[in-house]
Length: 273
Image (cartoon, rainbow, N blue to C red; front, top):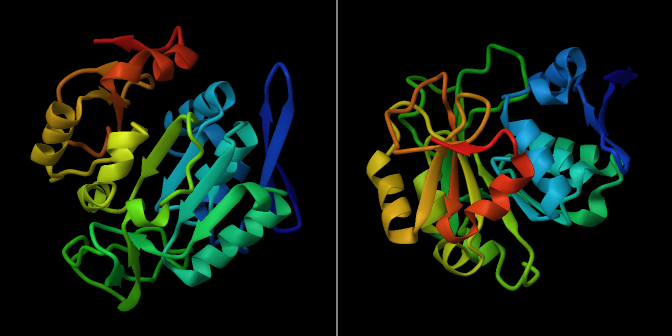
C-alpha cells in the first residue's frame, strides 16, 4: 500500500487488469484506512474483503453496502468489477468522507450514496453514538439504544426501507451482493427488503454479533430458501446456524438455487461442510 499526503492507495492485481482505489486517512482517525495502509486491503475483517473482491471480479454484481462508513467495501467492490454500488451511511459527516473517497477513486459515476439508515419502515429514527473518547471516525453508532451501555449522544437520521430506496434501480438479470453491518439491526434491514429478497434473490453477508436473533435467520433459511455458510475458517462452510461469537462475525446466506453461482468463483476454497 502507498500513502500520498493523507490518501492511502489500495491496489488490486488481477491477471487481466490492475485496479486501485483511494481512501483518506482523516489524519489517522479512519481506522479502516489505517489498517489498509499498514497491512493491506485484504487484512481488514478477513476473509470478507478477499471474498467480495473475488465475487465482484467474477460476477460483476450490483453491490449493496449497508453500514458503509467511509466506503471501504463499496470502493473495493467497484475496483474489483461491480457494475454499481449503493452505499448506505446515515451520518452526514461520514458520508461526506465516503463521497470524497469515491471522487478521488474516480468511482462517483458508479456509486449511489444514500445518507440514511435502513430499517423496516420509512421515516426517521434515533441513532445512538457510543462514547467518543477514542478520537477515531465513528464506526459503531446504532439504532439500538441497548447496543452500548453508555452513549456520547444521539441524533435523528433519515430511515428508509431497502425496497423503497432501490425501487426500479436494479438492472434486470444482474446478480446482487448485499453486505449488512449495522450493529445488531440486520433483521430490521431485511424486514424492509422483502421485495428484494423475493425478486433479486441476492447473496447476503451479515455481521452477526453475540445475542443475535437466531430465530429470524433460521426463518430466512427455512422460509426464504437460503443456505447458511460460516466464514470463520476463511472460506464458506455450509451448516446450521450456531451461537455467534466475536471470532466468527461474518455469515453468508445464499439463495439455494444460486449456490453454485456464488461458490464457483471461490473454488477451490469453497466447500460444503
